[in-house]
Amino acid sequence: MRFRWDWLRPVVSAPYVPTIGPVHPSVLTEDLFTDTLIAASTDRWFLRYDKDIRWSESKDETVLVEGIAHRPGETLIPTLSRRGSGMVKVHLYGIEPDSAFAATELAQKLAAEHGTGRARIVRFLGPEAPDGRGTRIQLQDFRVAIRPAPDGPVRPFNEWPAGVRGTFAIFAKEMAADGFTFLFEQMQAGKVGPVLTAAVRDRVAGAIGPMEIRPDAIGTPQLMPQYFGVLQEHRGHGLGRLLWRAAMHWGQVNGAAYQLLQTEVGGPSDRLCRSEGLASLGFTY
Image (cartoon, rainbow, N blue to C red; front, side):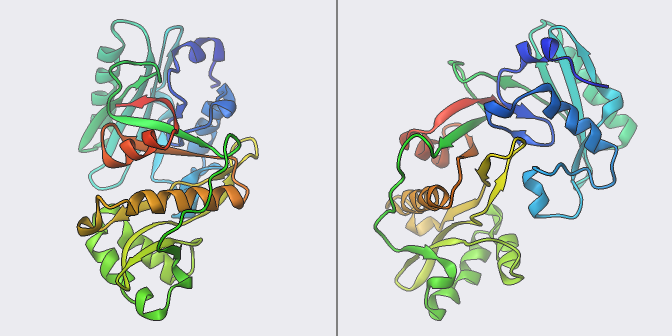
């Protein structure tokens, strides 16, 4: 099947595509949605511009093509993830009063058919929504303003002395919930780009990375999402902002046109991005 843009575009309030995630508004077309259906019929499920292709040989989530409901005013796109006990998510693009009920019924039905432990509905709000909630999609456009290098104890991991580098394993263990154990494994295997690291008293206190740029669906260079975190005892002193600005400077000087981020509304990263002037593109919840 193909999506009809005259049906879909009026109900897409945030630039978010199932299995791909947030995308730049300039690449948001029916072809992007249709590409996810094509990928669902392959063994690997990956699209060439999929951000997750960095981490795995196969895609964790795929579109359940047979469950799609597509009509004027309402499009429901279900996906299946086999991670853990499994999850069905129904992405609801719609303005009809009964859309949420239809999405709930579809999620429960498909979860039962595929034997997953969880079923969810993903809904969207535009950037102008006064009651924005859940996750905010944010845009850093490197073509708008210069991002200068910050002055502080941040440098690429490999540029620190051996004694400082040796403390990254301790940092990664303490920040395992933020993905740094996995990142450290990738770093040791030489599979990722630079990781910008902050040190305090010769110990790693924060990091952001890997720093990698890949082309989006139309070939525009995009700075990929990073793992980002600061040890609890070093928070509140500007170290996170220093790391963030260093990452943005790296992206700009290395040729990225933009970066898309997802931040929990009201959380520390959300407040940081808002204070740094990033543009809000909408919300998922």
